[in-house]
Structure formats: structure tokens, C-alpha cells
Length: 368
Image 1 (cartoon, rainbow, N blue to C red):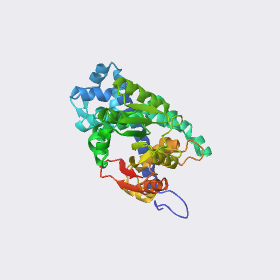
Image 2 (tube, one colour; image 1 turned 180 degrees about the vertical axis):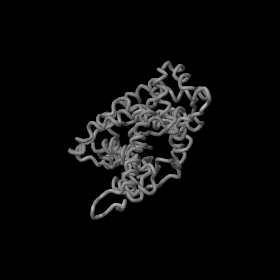
Image 3 (cartoon, one colour; image 1 turned 45 degrees about the vertical axis):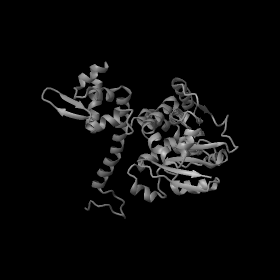
Image 4 (tube, helix red, strand yellow; image 1 turned 120 degrees about the vertical axis):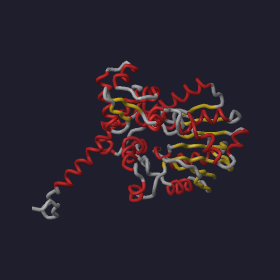
């Protein structure tokens, strides 16, 4: 009796069956371990390990944070088994610590490689599974505010570290002539401003300029206004474009849009609004996910493709289809070819990809 699959009998190959079941459960392992990473961040376990600077027993870690030792032991066994946390098997007790690289990704919010933003909002993202079956039936998704206030916090924590390190020294200088205009005093709009980090950073660096951040998330706008007040940045304000839209009089010098066009229900309409808002010599800095033209290319060249398509269903594409007739671009649906095509349709005539190295994003300079 052969163990190979028979096309006529339809019987499964036992070895392939075992391997496929193993593959499926490795995906479940990743989901469960992601939940444990969320807890490690939320409870301060990673931060405490990084601060310790040495290996700790699970009891020592629990005592430092006043947590129950049995729960910490089971948690840290998961993290060590998943190779997130390092373990040293001493004769008296296992001791656990973070490599220098792990300490950056898991605990250093000031480093551009800090990675806990998506894990912060993991419960809200996964909770979307409760409502997504209906979206599959109706075609209507859910906007970012459906993830609640922690959704906005998670997005802020995802983008702030890189923006803090690179927006002013790396990104803006790559846009031809924009530093001089900002220093002289420019009128700027930041589309999809989120919690306001980029807008406030530009306003603080260029006090002669005026920056307006636009977003439709009330949770993000609340955070942006609170931060502006705390930091006392007087030349920055925040608006909901549904009540206070972009100007249509060609009065803006500079527009930015960071990682938001692919999330929009009507991105072409927004692009047309940006074109009407800009002066004839204005410039739009368009930043969005680095995507490829076809699914065949994507699954070969993007090792994170399955993650990004899944996030799209639960977040990006869901937002982009949160109203009837939404464009539904999704996380990987806005490659450079699509960006060129849509900006031209919106009335722009010049499009240049900037030479900025980023693992996730592509940067474009778009002009009327």
C-alpha cells in the first residue's frame, strides 16, 4: 500500500498530513506567543528585564513588579521557548534575560526599531474577528475608531520611534527645497496625522511655519490635541476634515501623508483635494507601504506577506471599505505603479521616488 497521495482515491499522504497539521499549528503558536508579547509589554516585564541589565530568575522578575510568581514563570517559559527571551540554565534556577537586540525591539521606545506598537493594539485587532464575518457578507468594513482608544495608542507607538529619529534629519531634507521653505515660513497640512507626532515635530522645528493635522479618528485627534497642549506648540492645530476640510484655494506649500492613503475609503478624492489645496509650486510628500504589483511577486519577495494580508483584513482594508463603495486598497494594494497612476489622475504631473531606506515604506515626492 503506497503512502503517496492518490489522485484517483483522494487519500491523503500520512507524512504530508502530519506536516500540514504542523504548519497550521505553527501559525497558532505565533498568534498565542504574540498574545504573550502583548502581556510582556503591558505588564512592563520586558522593560524591567532591560532595566535589570542582568539575567533574573522568574521569581526575581515577579518580585520587582509585584506580580504573582507562578504566572510570571509560565509566561517566561513561553517567551524562552519561542526564543524571544534568552535563558541560562544555572544549577540553582533558570535565569532569563534579553539580548541587546531584544531589549531594543521590546523595550526601547526611543529606538526606531522598537516594535511594540502593533502588539499594544493586538487585543483590539483580534477582537475584530467577532464582527468580520458580517463584513464578508455585506462588504462593509470597520474604521480605525472601531478599535477604540488603545487602537490609536498602538498606531502612535508603532510610528513615533522611527519618525522621531528620521523625519527631520532624513526624510524632509530628501524633498527638494522644502527645508528652506519651512524655515522661511510655509503653510503645511499633514493628512492622516494620527496622534500628531509628525505635525508637532515639524511645527516645533520650524516655528515660522504653520502646520494643520487632519484625521477622522476622534481618538487620535484627542491624543494630538492633548500632546499639542502639553508641549505648548502654538503653530500647530488639528482638524477633522469632515467638518473642516482642506482649503481649495491653492494656499498650501507642503502636504504630507504618512501611511494612510491605502486605508482611505475614497483615496482618489483625497488626492484631488490635496491637488486643489497646493500652490502651483507646492509639494506633496507621499509615504506609504512598499508594495509590489502582483500577488505572485509579493509571495516570493515579501517574507511578511501573510502577516500583511491578514492585518489588511482586520485593519487596513477593513478601514478602506468601511463605507459603501470604499476603494478597499488594503495594506499591499498601493504599489508605486498605482501611486503614479492615481496621482496623475488627480491632476499631478511630477512623481519621484525618493532614495530613503525603510524596511516597510516607500517615499514619493509628488508635484503639480
